[in-house]
Amino acid sequence: MRSGFIKKALFYFGILSLASLIVMILLLLFMDKPPMEDFNKCIEIMTKAKKVNADVYAPEYYQSAETNYKYAFIELRRQNEKLFFQRNFSKAKELIVNAILKAELARNASGTNKDTQKARFLKETEMLRKKLDSYHEFFIKLPLRAQTRKDYEFGKLSVEESVNAFEKGDIMKANKKLNEGKARIGYADAEVNQLLKEYFSRFSKWQRWVESTISTSANNKCYAFVVDKIKHKGFLYLNGKLYKEYDVEFGKNWIGDKLYAGDNATPEGRYMVTRKKGTRDSGYYKAMMLNYPNAEDRSEFDARRRSGQISRSRGIGGLIEIHGNGGKGVDWTKGCVALSDDKIDELYSKLSVGSPVTIVGSTVALSDLLK
Amino acid sequence: MKKGLLKLVTLSILVVTLASCAKVPQADIDAANVAIEAAKKAGADRYVAASFQAAVDAQKSGLAQVEEQNAKFALFRNYDAAKTTLTSVTTLSNKAVEETTARKEALKAEVTAAVAELTTTIAGDKELLAKAPKGKEGKAAVEAIGQEIGVVETVLTEVSAGLTNNDDILTLSEKVKPAVEKAKAINTELTDVIAKAKGPKAKAPKAKK
Image 1 (tube, rainbow over the protein chains, first blue to last red):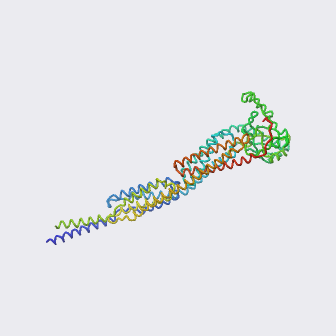
Image 2: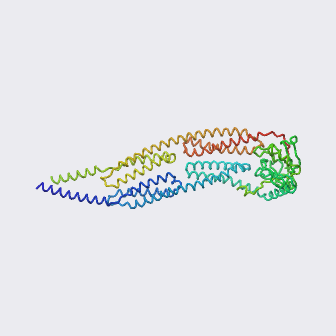
Image 3: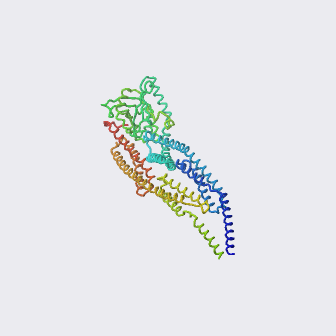
């Protein structure tokens, strides 16, 4: 009787176990599977995207891929916490597929964006460097405030820092530094532009003087000398055609017209050589004296004195020459035009008493100069 | 007696079943998280980005492997592969920290050398500035160059202070390099100005100008 009961119990237990096993196998066979292949694929693509700096060059796509991956993983974990027959990975699948898509987009866009951003960055830095170079060669001679110069220098250092950061792939810092540089250069530019704008208000007058001087050279078949203060160049014309150009230096307050004796400014106007001095007569190797002040200078000087712009005790000045001892690379005269000795030798041999000499702020318009 | 035997068999099956279930490697997961955080705190993501990324990728893979096993029926779970991957996270993170320290040291040496070079170059610039033509011959240019030296000196002060305060060495490195170039350029410019100024001496000019 006892053995019969045990047999019966074991039989039912066996049946129950078998039934449970079959149910479990069926459930396991048909239960929802987690998208593990997609997760591994996503990790692989995101690694590739990161390698091409997609996080820097395609940040929106890359961030979206990261976010989708994060939520897909949370969803995967949430489903895994449920009983196996209750699990549903459809949401996790949707999220991980989206993450793969965004990671692929980030990887592909990164290359293109990198090229575009690099081109834009290089163009901008090139432009700023050009501006800084022109400052160094041209603006350096302008009488600017110390702060303006500092702004340019700090701006220049920021641009170089920006380039360093860019080369290291730190695009955020590169852009930040570039903007800092642009801002500081911009402050300095504003002052330079204001100064030049005021100075160039006389440009039409300078243009007329230059045209008239070249015409005189053409009509009289003679040499004429045109001095461009901004460019720091002297242009020698023969028969109305440009014959040769020379580097020249002026007084330290060269920007603007000469107002009175001792202002260290070089006068602007139409003059002529009144006297030639050889090495024995000149304190500056060789010199050619100009007829400063001419009638126009005198009339302007008188008007300024009458209006109180110039004190009554001031004189108009004189003894303005084109002379040697130049080639120092700085503006050092008291108002004369200086050339190096070998160049003054050349010029001295070409110009004679009566040769026209015109001194202007610029021979080209401000807009062309700043291009 | 019969009932007791049945209970015993059932309990034994249950115990064997439960005992054979593999456990989630939580300690390895936590260790990997701590290692990644430590690497990030050390700055590995900025100084040795590739090594840091390798650790992060390994962490992602390890956690995915854990979930892959979690998705299986308890009896079939095996976390060995996940454990190996998660252990590699700690190894990779520690390696990234070591590399970061080395990179920082190298950069610090570079910046220190650059600061020394900048100090010497500025001193040289000042020496040349003292020799530069004064008075009417280039006073303005000399003043301007003096201002430029002032700007470079400001950078030197900032970088030196940054070194003392253990500021971000990468930023200091990016800052000091252009300043060194600028100081060198000033040196060249001053040498040029001095050379140009050594022209023939002028006779005393007449006063009026």
